[in-house]
Amino acid sequence: MRLRVTAERGEAAYHSAFNTIATIPGSVWPDEWVLVGAHRDAWGPGAVDNVSGTASVIEAARAFAAAARQGHRPRRTIVFATWDAEEWGIIGSTEWVEANADQLGAHAIAYVNQDSPVSGSRFGASAAPEIRGLVREATRVVRDPGSGRFVYDVWLEAQREEDEGASMAEPTLGTMGGGSDHLPFYLHLGIPVAGYGFGGPSGVYHSMYDTADWMQRFGDPGYEYHATTSRLTAVIVARLANADLIPYGHEALAAAFRANLTDVAGELMASSGVEGIAGALQAAHEALDDYQEAASRFEAGRAAWLAAAGPSNRLAAQANGLQRDAIAALLRSPGEGGGWSRNLYVQDDPDNGYAPVLLPGVRLALRAGDLGLAGRELRLLADHFHRAADALQRALAVLPEQSR
Ligand SMILES: [Zn+2]
Image (tube, rainbow, N blue to C red; front, side, top):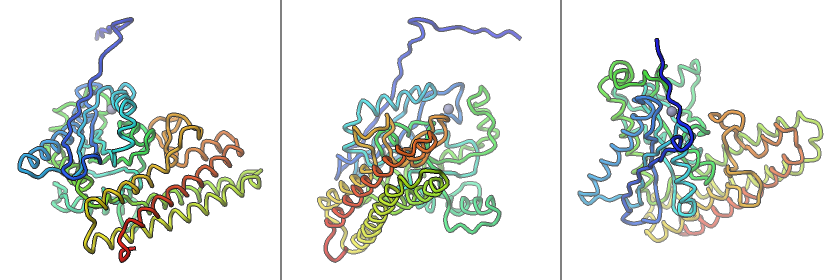
């Protein structure tokens, strides 16, 4: 066998990368943006990675465009993107996010990512804790083509079987770490992100066998799971774009911080010198109590408001701005240490780009054996929990008296 290799050196090693961006302006709140995207480049033919993701985004875009032509425009702005140069280091999306950071920080409410969503029939999802509920709910209204049942039920059953009869109340979603185009949105700007799809025993990842032929024979004969993924994308994006009050799960986010803080406290107890940072740990716990309390009061008020008259467009915009502030409060401010990753809940592991580290400030300080830094990071967390609680209290104050 002969193999021919062509090296690209000097000027020839430079290539242009092209993102494609399409926007449907919102009819009510054009300054609130829902983003959905997929990378368009691939190592080989890329039927799974990432024609399946590109198809999901383009088909959802086609559906929204058809609805808009018939007079049903989304209430918020929807931005559809296909990214270039993901496989070369998430370059296309990262450059776009950095170039538009101020705009995104001011307007984006969520980013939905579609990377390799179809290589089989088994559903799985990952999301920022604050939009896990939204993804879960969407699977209750879209049917699994194999069984005809709702994706939610098939997903829950499969997870229970895998956990050997565990009786979890609802399906579990994974953490969005590194490894795809959600990364700059989530880690750099703190924008809530989600990704999901149908997997299987693929084995063709990043190879020349990731072809349309493989897809038609093994991955998704009939392309029914492709259509299903796109339906899920349409439902998730439509709900984000049209909800009166953005359905962020503030309580879920606070609970996710809680679980990790408890874990970290356990690790700290096992290390010597912990006395020096006991106060910082205590401060973080107390601030998190405040945040969790504010989250649960706001969510109760939000539900009551929606069940009653519902908000006017103007009050909804005000409450939603404060909801966004509560999420953005959990981002490192300039001058507060850290690097490009500013999300206080998660970052990609510096030792493994595909894996996430939760509560990264504290955990990476512990990994480095720097208890002093861990203490400062705990105080920083406490400060940001207070800011998030404050934003939610102000959001609650926007609600009419009888809903609070
Ligand atoms: Zn890939």
